[in-house]
Every structure is written in C-alpha cells, then in structure tokens.
Image 1: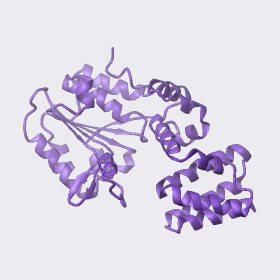
Image 2: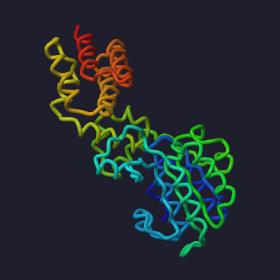
Image 3: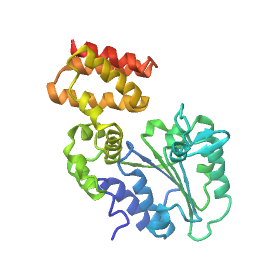
Length: 305
C-alpha cells in the first residue's frame, strides 16, 4: 500500500512526491502550498515515512531522532509556547504565533550533526508564512547548504513566503477538495455529520480541516444562543437581550466567526443583501475594537427594524 493512501484529493502532490522517492532524487527543500486543512501536514507525515524509513506511529508522535518538527509559537514570560500549550496555560494571546529566529537557529543546530538512524535528517516547518524577515533570512543560509537533510516548508501560498526562499524549494501545490473528496475525507475521519450542515461546508471552501474547525467552534457556542440568532430578533427588547448574551458568553474571536456563520445562514434563508451588509459592518466594527455589546445591539436593532 502506498504511504500516501490516506491522502485524498491531492493526486498531483502525491505523484510528485512518489516520483521523487521512486527515482531517489530528493530535493534539499520542498514548499507545500495551499489553504489550511487540505492535507499538507498529512502529506508531510506520509512523505517522512519513506524519507526516514520509519513507522507512521513514530512520525505522528514526533519521536524520531532524525526529525525536527517546528511550529509557530507564542512568547510568554520568556518561554515559547505552542498554541495548545498557550491555551492550556490560559495565556491571553494578543498577537498571533510565529516561527521565531531562535527556532530557525535550532534548525541549524539540529542539522550540524549527522543523522542517527536514517539516511538523512528531516525538518518540517509548519505555517512558514509566519516567519518574520529575520527568521526567514536565517533560514536562507540553511536552505543553501542543508547537508544530508530534507527540509519541508508548509505555507498557505507561494506569495506568503519570501521569494528568495521559494526559489530554493521544489514547490508542491495542494488544491481545494471537490465535493466528493470532501465527503470522503470527512467520513474517513469520523465527521460525516458535517455533510448535513451546508453553512459549515460553505465556510470551509474545500478544506476538510477547516470544516472540522468550524464544527468545533459551532459546538463551543451554547445551543440556545445559536437558536436565538439563526432567526434575527423580532423586537428591540429581544435585540438588546441577544446582544448582551453574545457579548457576555463568547469571546471576540468566536464572535467574528459567528458573523461569518450568520452570513451563510441568512443568505440561505432569504437571499437578503441587507442582512449580509449589516453583519459585515458589525464585523468591521469588532475588528476596530468597538465595544462588542454595542456593536451587536446596533446591528440587531437595525436588522429588526
């Protein structure tokens, strides 16, 4: 069975990677590009099985001496934390995580020694687009002379990475999945229930990972609150009550998500451009740090009048 058997809907990427393995002509660096949640991480894990001659279990646990997996981090009290660690520690995340210069220096240190078990070492840098310029420039030196190693960068697009880095990598494009492939992936990972929620599928735009993330966000909102907003408030009193509940119940990031979700819901219900425009205006105000309860109050009152 092919190492890429679990990667659905990415035939071009699979063909390019399998060919490199078959003829034993591996590039020093690869750039996997495509929107989040469409299989770039899974493809890297499948590729690493062959590169490191290792079991999938060791790759998934990141438990291989010749593998270094790098992801964006938050900086809290002088310590780097992954997104999962930051959430578990209750850290307030005011800025998005990034690949830091210190992490790129650790990549260089990792590559300064020969591989211990495999024929070559492997480095994966997730969300490479989050590298600031200093980190990206430091990575350039490593890409020029990686030694007995293969470096895999995962990024949302070619344009999100410095051209000098792109020019040193073999590009592997990943496409958004069509409807059938989306259904196949969601069934495979045990999320077939999402297929009955067209609003979530519309938000996902061909990304199974995004569809699952949208489902998780929806489930994080109290069902009674969702029920109170899928049909707009009919009175000013109800509008004020719903606005207060939203502001007190869910955080700012989830409120922004709720606006995107409601745009899909309201458009499916009435095809009303006015409701979409009011929601978009509310989103702009939330992003501009206007007081959330006030934003929702004004939006709901305008909508119900």
